[in-house]
Image 1 (cartoon, rainbow, N blue to C red):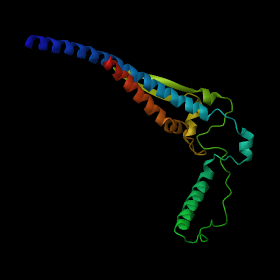
Image 2: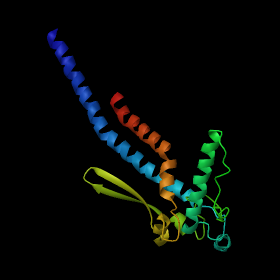
Image 3: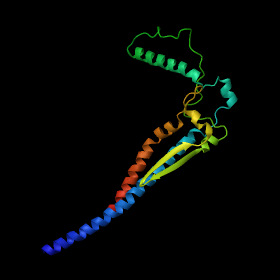
Image 4: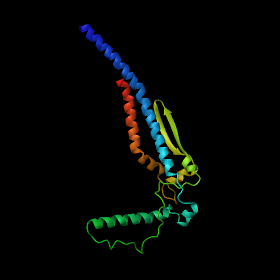
Length: 193
């Protein structure tokens, strides 16, 4: 009897070893697929931010170049004033003393959120690329825009920052987490078979 029990244990160990081998092969492959899919989701969302034409360049010029940095200071002041007013109102206090010296600054309203890029030629929207770097068993995915003027969207001396990539990453966060969780489940499922 003792011999049989030992053989059964050895057989279970062999089966367990086979399952572990299946996991060790499948798990990294599933995680790699999920990471690549996540990078592609970021690109998809970034392309959505640049796919609409809402104003022409001449219309933006007539509006006083609303994305110009010179307007950002006035927008920040207006936001601080709005926040201060809300805080005072919440306390039941008067807000009459909170006014701009010389009246309200005339700043053009942004036609869209800063991460929304007005489509002109479509080059920016189509310029998103996924680059893969491999070093040993480590893989890195880089999402970048290859058009020459894309670097200006990080902000210049004259234009406010347009956080397209940052917004795409933030808005795909939940989806990317779910993709990784599903990949982990698929990778570990190999052990249950």
